[in-house]
Amino acid sequence: MRPSLPSRSFRTQLVASTVAVTTLGVLVLTVVVQVVLARSTLRSLDTVLEDRAEAVVSAATADSGGRLVVPDARLDAGVAVYDRRGSLAAGSVPTSERAVYEQLSTTDRRRLVDRPGPDEGRVLAEPFTTPDGAAGVVVVTERLAPYERAERQALYVCIGAGLLMVVAAAGLAQWVSRRALAPVAEMARAAEEWSEQDLGHRFGLGPGGNEIVGLGRTLDRLLERVASAIRSEQRLTSELAHELRTPLAAVQANAELLAMHDDLRPVARECVDEIVLSVHRMGATIDGLLELARTEAAQALAGACVLRDAVEEAAAQTGVVVENEVPGSHRVRMPQALVVRAVAPVLENAGRLAGHVVVSTSATREGFVAVLVDDDGPGIADDDRERVFEPGVSGGGGSGLGLALSRRVARSLGGDVRVTDGPMSTRVMIELPAAT
Image (cartoon, rainbow, N blue to C red; front, side, top):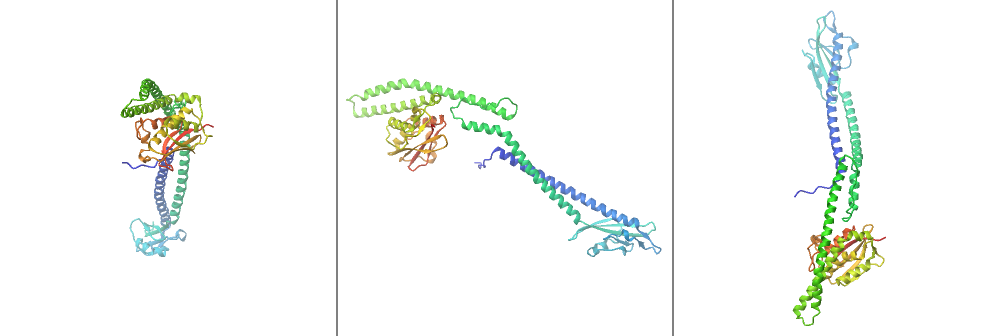
């Protein structure tokens, strides 16, 4: 099994990806700039050393005794001129670099040496021969500290500019994604508000050639097909219920006539009573199917009823003794017959399995009222809290359609039926639209 990943919105993923890519680009650019700047610094440093050495060589001459002579004006700090024997002829040697200078004083070729240590630098040794024929070596040094300071400043500038780029990219991605995905968010909000019976709603984004508009048109076509399938199901449900109603009425009439005979044996009377009870249950199921098929028409009537009266009627139809704690002031925005169809299967299920049933109300989401049915029966396991609403699943007796029909009736008007936790063994909550 693959591990579950934390869910994040597409906008968050887009912004995070933009920040990651921008950060990576800034890092690569910073590294490239620092490498190029370091190489440029070394070339500039070598050029400075060569220019200083060339200035000394061009001014060097030999006196009458063949000794090298260099004007003091050309002898900067850190410049030393050695004769052919390696003796210091002009300039001065920094104390910290004496060993390096002495090593380079007799070289016969140009040499560049990096000087490590706290006072890091670069040393150039340049052999030369004056027009008078005197030979020697000029040694010059240049400290790296000023150049490294410039490199650090460039690094700080790159980091600051990079942070600004990352922040700007994140803000731009957030703004663009919000504008681009606004139609999708609006579509999701609208779809969330539609109930399963709002078959006429469409997104209707209008003309356009972008991907979002194309998605809206595709979803509209899909909704049209789904609406057609639901209408076909409603017609089939209504037709089947009507077809079953006539033979079921005949069976019920004959069973009730047979039950009126006084000369039935006990076993036969028990069978007849069971037939009558089953026929009544089947009749209630068929009535529920017909009411569900007529839900759109009932919605158009915008009927309303007193919730307490509907609970009492549902209890009377099912024969379940309930403790009705529903206030008489609560009203729901649906016909009483539909409320009975939503509540009766829950009461019947509780009455079969429990000895004490309490019906009350509670606050729920805005615009709805929650009918709470509590009982002291054996309870419903957590794993079965959804399974009991599947068609064909029965908690004992019945057709196995009661709770499924109850949920479908409630959901057809935007509500719901589900098993929740309560003070007793079992609690079923029925959400119904409240009447204002």
